[in-house]
Length: 130
Image (tube, rainbow, N blue to C red; front, side, top):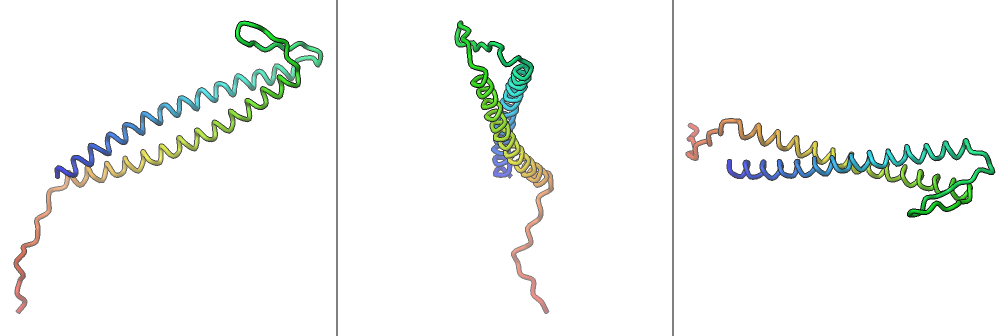
């Protein structure tokens, strides 16, 4: 019984760690999605600009003039990178959720074992068959 209790405690701690990891991974995905929306907005702005419009990039405290094609390529590259990162993070989330679900099922099984009354051991005396 003490072994079951110890195992249950260990599994509960593992489950808590996975939940914390899941929460931080979901937050990372939300941050990536926010960056993706921001870059899509920039992409739409570029599409609405005239061909001869000036584009500036903020570098530290200074605005530097940037070539349009260079700016568009940079934003497109960021969007590709962000999309790949979102896929990677979503796979990570799915893996964590799978691990957590397996641990949760094991915890339920242990809890149900602990709630069952102990079974009587069959007597060690062999019964003679006549």
